[in-house]
Image 1 (spheres, rainbow, N blue to C red):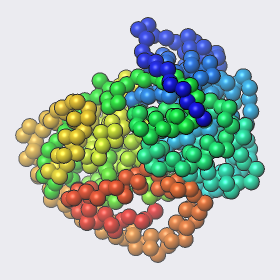
Image 2 (cartoon, rainbow, N blue to C red; image 1 turned 90 degrees about the vertical axis):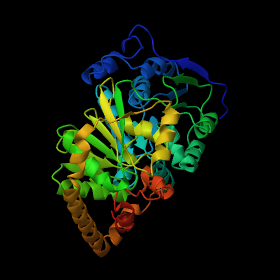
Image 3 (cartoon, one colour; image 1 turned 120 degrees about the vertical axis):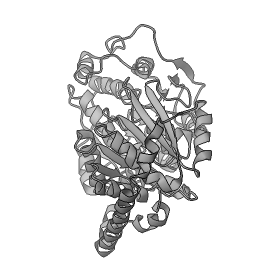
Image 4 (tube, one colour; image 1 turned 30 degrees about the vertical axis):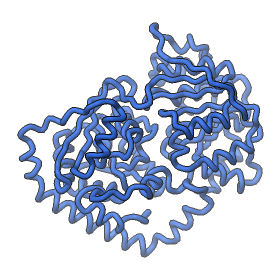
Length: 469
């Protein structure tokens, strides 16, 4: 489709608007009140009126700004006026985000009886085909698995689709989902509305915009690299050999608060979770080599508060809305400022305050300085004071817990070799490119970092745990 030059709107009115002011139906306004949405966010104020007029939208907003409701509410309003099956398709880069978007649609559309189907990798194709045969109104998917169903599920097509949404579009394209998106654009109606939402406007996103949107309204509510003002950002600099000690000390000092710890690889995620459990912390891990039920289970425990520490790869850095996160710790320094923005955006959401701490070793200085330069902001050093001596006192206990974690990993690997081959074949069957790996798999392929594979022993032990579930 051709694209004219986009109109640009800058959000943020001086007088706070209400959802009624945006032209939403009373049923949807009532649903917003039930979800404690008191006032629309800037991105919602700027985009919803144009979406209700039938315009295509390019929405650029920082993480935690309410992008999901910005595209869900107009779609639900149009669906209420003219109900039909397979009304809208929403594409997300990760499975967890797809499930979260579905929850938001169902909550906002509860008063009008909306039906959703989540179509992602790592789940049974047949049960998904049955869900699609029941003609849901909204399909939320990862691109690889959607193409699988379009090619292999009899009777399923999107010839009547009215809305296409690409959420976290920059991440979708970073994961090389471009080919799947191109296939989809060829089999859906040209006469449709398209919403493209992203935190950053990359050259790939601009190319996708030209290919898929017609005369869009461009809505920007943030600069390219920005964090919210309620977020306190710190760093700690120390030798690599003390990395696990500093993490343990921080989590001990922050006891009682909820925390997400981000790593670069699946191996270090698993190792840290085991180490922390050996030290008595309530920690769960989340990464793309876990089965989908286990991933949802870990996320559910963290959201419910039964576990207060989540060790995760960048699969958890995009879009997930967990309101109660108090602290984000970058155990491994992210490789780009964009990834940093998304990680720390898991806290200080929707006007709340939060804190982020980045652990910097002698091998991370260059990456860390690039992040500061891109944000045009110098982070404060975390106030440890005389507590550095207390950190080193933990060294013996942490070393013992780490050794025990490596033993557990070897044991799990042996069990996986004994009985995991058939299971991997069944879960992988019928999945499109990238659907099984999700986003951190692409990251892992690019990340061979000298001296830093997830802390002491993380790089050496990493190979033993990769390839498990």
